Image (cartoon, rainbow, N blue to C red):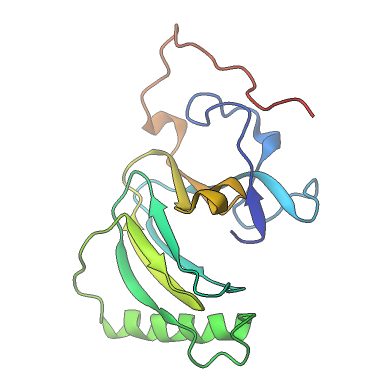
Length: 185
């Protein structure tokens, strides 16, 4: 996701997120990231923000669709399809993506999105894309991932961190703390 391979953090983000050196995300990749970058990939979202996410199949595999699931939310699918006009369907270009975004923005301006059926999982088609929308009104740390176990294990995931610490109940004083579950090298 965004050229970052998700790597599990050493403890649960909801209760032990003070070790920000293992996190990356938002609009930058930290200088500590190597190629390929692996970290606990987190996007920080303002509570009650309207969030649009585009997921696309940049380097399609033969007959492989990606079922993407978002924990903690239902979302609307605003756009979905395939890059039918892509010059190279084996490597979707930023121009191909830009064309989809331009059509999407035109639909937004025209008020074409009136209602939708809420979903928490959507298929990103082979050589295709989806654009989803939700209102970030459920504070917490929410996993967004491909439902194929192999893709989840290899990092096709991101955590959406919604709100500030004050938006969540405080952690009980006697709440047990997990220790680093990352195995030694």
